[in-house]
Amino acid sequence: MCKLCDEGKPQDHSSSQLGRRDFLKASTATAAAAAGMSLFAAPPARAHDNDDPPQDSGRHRRRYVIRGGHVMSMDPAVGDFVKADVLVEGKKILAVRPNIHASGAGEIDARGRIVMPGFIDTHHHQFETALRSFLANGILINDGSGTPSADPTYYEYILLKFAPVYRPEDVYISELFGGLAQLDGGVTTVHDISQIHHSPQHSDAAIQALFDTGRRAALGYFESAGGVAGNQYPQDAVRIKNQWFSSSDQLVHMIMGGEVYLGEPTYTQAWEIGRKLGLQIAAHILSPFGIRPILDDLAAGTGGVNNNIGLGPDNLFIHMTGMSDFGWQGVKDKGVQVSIAFPIEMNMRHGIPPILKMQSLGIEPSLSSDVEVTMTADFFTQLRSAMTMQRMVANQMILEQGTFEFPNQWPTPAPGTPALLNVRDVLRFATINGAKHLRLDGKTGSLTPGKEADILILDATALNVAPLNNVP
Image (cartoon, rainbow, N blue to C red; front, side):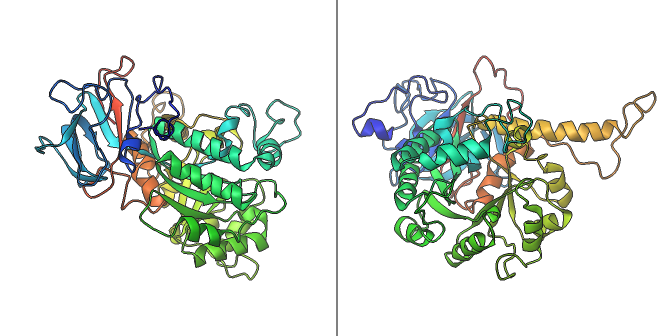
């Protein structure tokens, strides 16, 4: 079930946090990552008496049923179930309901488990996985303070020192390692923002690793970090699209990176190429690097060398910290998608994650892990950080509407106060919102009949989880 094992290079998966065998590997286009070593341990009537998935799972017309789990579909039309089954044929979900009868289908015993869509990470620099935790205390740029956070920093060390010396084989290993680690953590789809395109060989290594990982992904074709001599960004996008992404029906697709901080000539060329190729265009938009006036120009439709580049629904912006009201209104009006990396933004001085601003505009983010050089890519961390940060700020706003003295020490929230995020909100950010933001909501993001079976199964019987009083 593991690519390396299949190639005759046995791997020890016994310590996997979410199950010994990658179920996504068995079905090529599906995933059921399980928090529990006994997920696939089946009673005698089941397909297997071990933790392997049913035989031939994922093959054309082969059916299996995920039986008796607590199903959280993330699709309001399908609903949630205290106990239900999920029927899959080949790569596709056929039905989600209680008591499915499917003669001859393999079975996965999901009693005591939570069955839900896999997480979707809309911004992850996977080439940095080998540098995991190197920058635990660092911020983005040296601020001259002489503190442990000021040196080493992300921009000077990760992008300008480490990244430029990566060889293609380093890229491949880090990408594959990062992808398998995220799959092991239940993240079944990623937007890999790859700033390691020093040569066509580096690009091909990154892409090959995404395909070899076997999970759903978007290659973010960004610049060569450090501007390594001989790099062919952004013009090599045409070759990459034609060579690797000629089909729209594959697990990996392409997004064009168009960083505005690279200067007008470069980002103009990148955006024009991306739009000519029909690709989404992604960019980091954040407080440093003087980006606020650039976004204002784009919101006015006067960006780029010829003052004619504007925002569109093909844009995916990351962070969006420190931007003007005018820039935000352009983002809303033009249907731009926004990915927030709550833990990283709070730790590395990107600015306050703009969740309250998005709430005021009636739009929602997707979630992203960003860089593992500083913090974990575990998606439960992203979920909890999003909810905790928003509630901290909103709760303090409410308290300050009182006087901290009786009888006004516990005020009723005033009209217009942001609603507190709840667990379903952040789960929506992490699943169906991510799918929408990557143009994949027709394929994944919810347990909807007709979509592909990117499925996460969590053990709710574990000692540190039970009793299960509230599934979300």
